[in-house]
Amino acid sequence: MADKEVKDSIENAIECITKSLKISDNCLMDLKTLNNTELSNYDLKDMVETAISLSEVYSEEKEITINSEIAEGITILADENKFLSVIVNMIKNAVESIEEKGEIDIIADSSKDVISLKISNNGKEMEKEVQEHIFDEGFTTKKTGSGLGLYICKKTLEEQFAQLQLNHSDKKTTEFEILFPKIKYETQIN
View 1 (cartoon, rainbow, N blue to C red):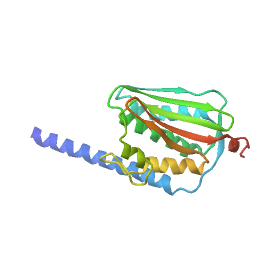
View 2 (view 1 turned 90 degrees about the horizontal axis):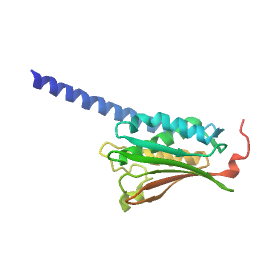
View 3 (view 1 turned 120 degrees about the vertical axis):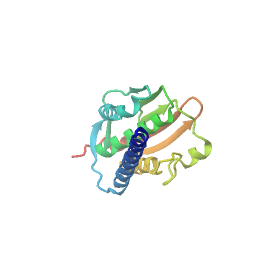
């Protein structure tokens, strides 16, 4: 009797996980097909802190610390929900690359022409082939991945006049960077 209960419990858990993955993939597909981007001015520090708060569920089990270093007063032009979805997805990916205990650093810098937001982690190094195809639609290294996450993140940021790039991935860190052209953010959007 106990064996049947264990088997039923395992099958139920697998079914729940499968459903969760389908829901996640559907949310990514919805984000991909939405063409209604509503841009407004937002404080970058507030947005990143909100995304970190939303991402804590992913990092708690692995004892991963998320550090942020963002100056006050940096304003970006963004679609709030889409931007938060991008940052949460990137944090989730970073968490997944760290086996246990690690750090994710989110650092913003503002120069004359560009606002830079770097998201790095000390997880596994990406192989060269992975680095070359990381933003390709349908490319995944995960057993249950859809290959849509970073592809959609990149396209979503482009809709907001920003660029997403992989700066490097080596044995010490993997670093992604989002670049916002500062000129676009000097005009107030109403």
